[in-house]
Length: 578
Image 1: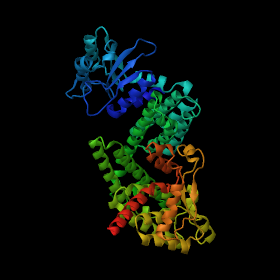
Image 2: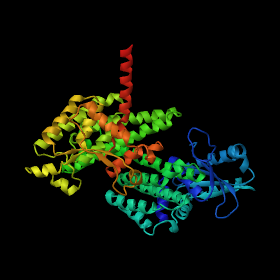
Image 3: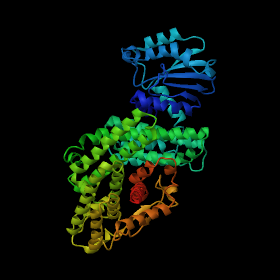
Image 4: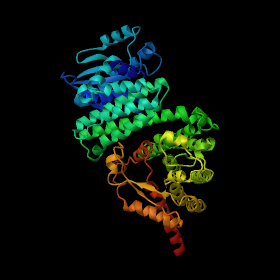
């Protein structure tokens, strides 16, 4: 295990990776971290600063200057301003005399040379000469290399008394099977489940569990990155994020020092999840969306089913990333113009990528499974943030409806409620009317098309759904899903079935009446607004859970359209009065 962790540390970058791990490790060791990595402000050589006692020793101040990988001549004293020796000089000349908090000036100081790998022998004499020359009473230097960091992580994050007995083998199996992403993800999911079995324990143990999940996910990510196969890391990051929220959610409503520690640990997992998502999409998906059948051919399967399943999966991943970019812009953009501009650029890139993905891969005009409506709904929600996308959204839905009805009439690969891969391979069974009605006994696809047709004011599209219901799907229960009183308990871990459905969505009624019924159900059902992620402003977590566990997207996310329409109606009435 120590070797695995050391290899992981060696592969970490300096910024936002190695310097993100270290503060959590120091906190777990019992130190108080009073300075964390930051952007845009001078740190005078200090990447992380902490104070406290290690292993019962005297209280000291620990100042860390961090370098990734192995320390060679260039990294020690090269031409770059990022070399280690100039950073150490700044600590001695500027930080200690001028920026060390006054309450710590009477304590002994330890300057820690922190590297993810090792100090290479060619540069060790220079390093030792420097440290010997500059040490003095009350100030010493320490080397924190990959071996020491791995030992501390193993000791403080992965202690045997807090890990299930089979946790380490599961991590090893997940890493060993990266070339088989589904198997790797399955073992990592088991690991997350075992680390999260802390329902009735104290907050300190919850912090430990979230941090353990964080470290294990980092290990998986760095190994996946080295293998150039991020599939397992992506799926595992979704599962880790959802389980971490289940462990952390109570702490977001309190505010104690312990609760803040849990919040920081959860935020670290959220940032890591977004990092994995961005790297996966930027390397594997975005460069190919503008190529005709570029991603369809990349599936490398002769089966149209495989292509269809994967492309809708990719669509959902792209849309979720766009929604997180939108959320980041809302959360941080007001106070950080640079961050806001970055989020806007990400939104524009993903918006265009989704449009290109759909137009260049015709399989996205014909879902084979009814539950692919989940990915369609998430994509529509993201695209709806910009009014200029509405015609594209309506055209896409129109084509989906046309092809779905045509395939049903011709006994082709029409959307069905089947989920197992084997059953989908055998679909359709030609000429069997009972089979056709059985596998279309319920649908969230057609009522979702009707709902968005109404929201986009495309009445002709809405009427076509009504005709499809009357001509082909009188046997089919058009449904929409809503959370219920048990959803908060089960949504983030998928521990049991939850929620309820609005059955027989009345698409036979006029548009306004149908919308009112759907929205009245939204207003009468208070459970959505009581979901912990919704109350704490982390509403994209609900969509992550929907995508990951294949839960339909609730119509509550469309209530913004109702408020917008109310504003328009009120303005019309005011103008009429004038």
